Amino acid sequence: MSKRNKIIYWVATLWLSLGMVSTGIVQLLKVKAEVDAFTHLGYPVYLMTILGIWKLLGVIAVLVPRFPLLKEWAYAGFFFAMSGAIVSHITLGDPVTQILPSLLLLTLTIVSWYFRPAERRVHVKTLQPAF
Image (tube, rainbow, N blue to C red; front, side, top):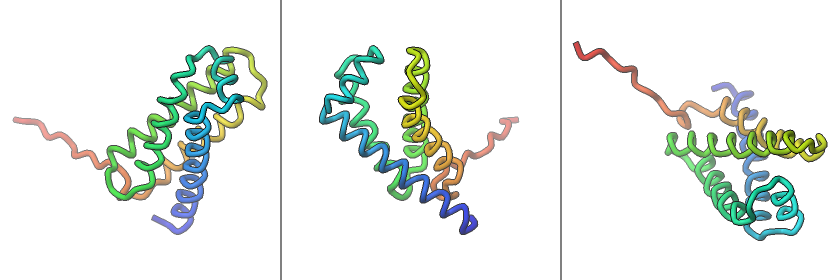
């Protein structure tokens, strides 16, 4: 992996982690502005606890060495959570300013996943025919 790709990976991953930790904590603490945003989108408040815990666990999974399959699941969770938030905002006709934070985190998720080092990737063995 080139030095440039390592820098891109770590910058994207650290910003992604910071964003997920901060929003996860805000959701766990049920900050009023976040509760208002969730109810505006039509989601139950208890979902904030689930997402907050998953975001914190996802950050741990992405940052710790090894466990590439767990990392894939964390990236998938981040992707689904952020793309779901974007679609929810668009569906309600919210202004772009409310969509941008989720779009930024989605972009960071994709960049971090794409530039992750080989030791952080799942290596799939090719299947050989039985005959």
